[in-house]
Image 1: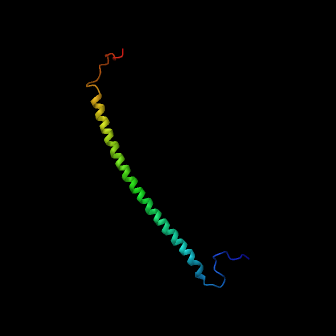
Image 2: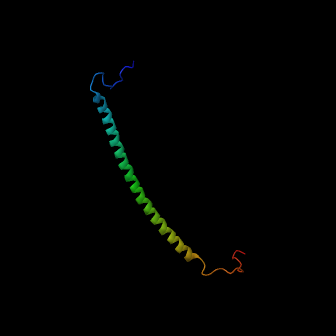
Image 3: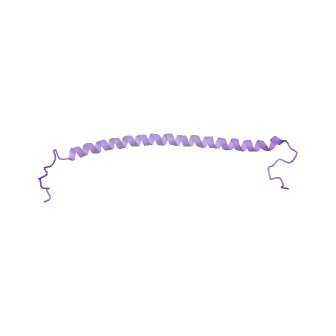
Length: 87
C-alpha cells in the first residue's frame, strides 16, 4: 500500500479538505494567466500602433522617392538613335 504523500489529507479527514488547496492553486494559476494575457494584449496593441506608424512613414517615403525620381529623370524619352554620352 502506498504511503500518503506530503500534503495529502490523512485517512478519515473531511473529503473536501484535500480539494481546497488544489482550488487555491488553480485560482492562483488562473490569476497569473489572466495577468499575463492582459500584458500580452497590451504589447499587441502597442505593436499594432507602431506598425501603423511605420506603414505611414514608408508610404510617405515612397511618395517622396517617386517625386525625386520624377525630378531627376530627363524631360522626355530618349531617342533610340541617341548615342549615350560615354561613347
